[in-house]
Length: 173
Ligand code: IMP
Ligand code: MG
Image (tube, rainbow, N blue to C red; front, side, top):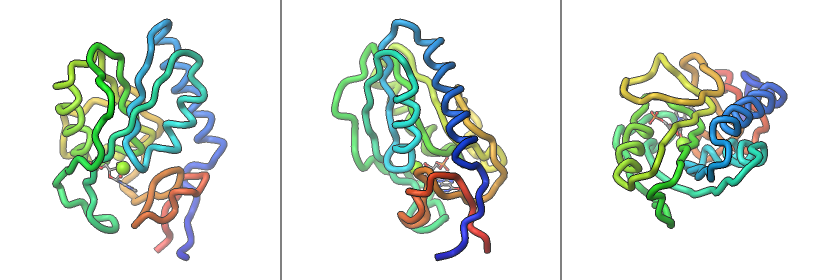
């Protein structure tokens, strides 16, 4: 196993998740929130976020694939698992682990808008602004902006490995 260097430790992650949850809670007072968790990477973040929002929260799952193998993007997005319930008229927040080129979220926004939610916002734990190709994607809630490094942990993987690390780190080459 390669060595993983800590970039964002558990304490920092939890503190930031608390802050985002508090912000969402205050902006959605009295409304039911549908969190759409993008499998598999954002499972850890979605669960932690949901637990910290005091109010009506429902969780839905979508799975798309944009990466074929390792760290190289194929550029093509495929829907692997679709929503089970209607989001028509609902207040939806898409929860993503990381926004890199923006292709995944750009595709998902277009797709979800066709389903006519009442509102649609984006929440991403990590953002690599230097890598953005799709400039039209606006993230409403961002955890941390990070440099252009391939990161793992807290849901993020390389070939399915490292998702269970409690922190976000990068692999020392
Ligand atoms: P985008 O479509 O290029 O914005 O990429 C988004 C997806 O690529 C994320 O949901 C991740 O699954 C994956 N990804 C992008 N950067 C990283 C990284 O540094 N580590 C692990 N996965 C990444
Ligand atoms: Mg992902």
